[in-house]
Amino acid sequence: MDNSENGNRKKGFWNFIDNIEGDKIVWIIVFMLIIFSILAIFSSTPLLALQQHTDRISIMKEQIAIVAVGLGVIFGLYSIKKIGIFRIFSQLGFFVSLVLLIFLVFDIDIKGVVVSQNLNEAQRTLEIFKLQVHVYEVVKVAMIMYLAWALHAYKKDLEAMDQGQESGTLWILNRIGRNKNFAFLKLPLWKRIFYLYLPIAITAGMILPGSNSSMLFISVIMVATLLLGGLPMKEIIITAAIGATVLGIGLSIYFASDKTFLKPVFSRIETGVTRMTMEIDPKIAMKGLTPDTPAYDKKLGQIKQPNAALIAIHEGGLTGKGPGNSTQKYAVPVMFGDYIFSFLVEEYGLLGGIFIIILYVSLLARGSTISRNCDNQFAKTAVGGLSLLITGQAFMHMMVNVGIGPLTGQTLPLISHGSSSFLMFSVAFGIILSISRMAKKKIQEEELAAKPIYESERDDIQAALDTIEEIDS
Image (tube, rainbow, N blue to C red; front, side, top):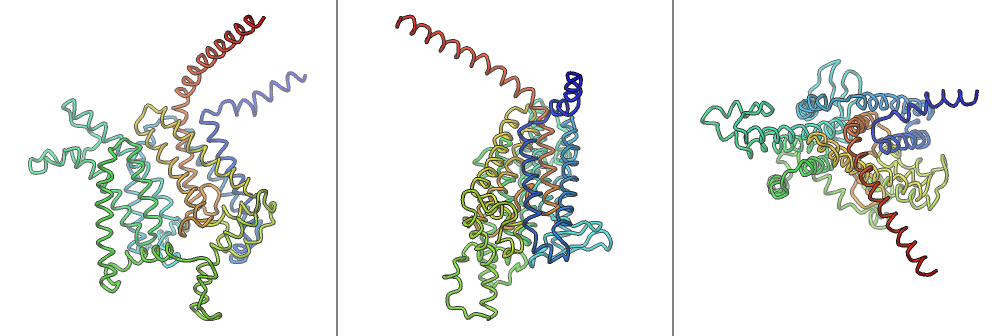
């Protein structure tokens, strides 16, 4: 009877676990981050509950619903077994990003369909069919997938050219290049400019009016994706230098023209410079300001949140105050978003913070392993870029929380409150897990190949020890 019950259990739940084909370490990371998210959102949202005239139970239910949808997205993407499906949709990544950014930048409203929304004096979100979409969160993932496709298509095109054929992957320039006057467009450099560098430049330029920090972060991730895809460092450095020069010239004209030249674009850079140079030490920042004056209140509002985050980290100590015992969540209105890491350290201590860091570092390590063992160029670049995006944003969030970097508003992936961010990172994890199925067999082959080496070394060591014992006797 007992054996029968054990057999049924193994065929049920444990058999389900055994049959999960994606990278199990990545699965563990996903579930651990989600557990932290649910616990943190429930405890860190008293001010959000007051603002929305609701209670924390309702907010937690909303978060659980978002988590459920996110898990559905992850499992749905994980279930895709053909990498070609991802390649097909990745072609649209730049188009989707461009359309969303056009609606955002030019404040285009279509009643009942798309409505742009102002956030902190900048256009960053759209309301699409009554659903709020943070455009930059979509752009991050969409552009990485597009660049993965473009790099794969470019290399396929080069292989076709070497064989004297015309590839159908980059058909736009290949067709235009049939005209003698535009034959130069068939050159590899122009294809890289058209399919890689130009989309990056357009995306970065359209993000700039809304958030300079997001522009810099997303640009760095996109450029890093090109490096992961195998483009030469020298060419990327030259391209980045050209972009920085153009931006510098525009910014110089902006300040020289009494700050009127392209004000909507460069005013956000001015905000970024102000944040980078802002002193958050109250003794220095508030010096010379008279209490209860507009200037005093404005400065206090600027330094209140970063100081509260530092206090939360300091008060957390080694083991933390315990779940639900945070005090700084009453001082920081966005503790559940931009400062969730400091909240977690306050409640779970330095040990809890280190554990979260280990989760993200482990993801980067597994992403590197999966990417290295992919035979497909598209898969290599996609996994590498997405892993770098998730880990890079996590560490940027942590740096802001501990006072190392300027305020950026970047969330902690899969933990911070926010439906757009959570769902887009669910897409990223789902793609990584799906591609990991393809790399799993090769990883297992490497592990099996390493096992005989280990056993051989162990036998040699044992033989040496036996020889020593015989000599001693």
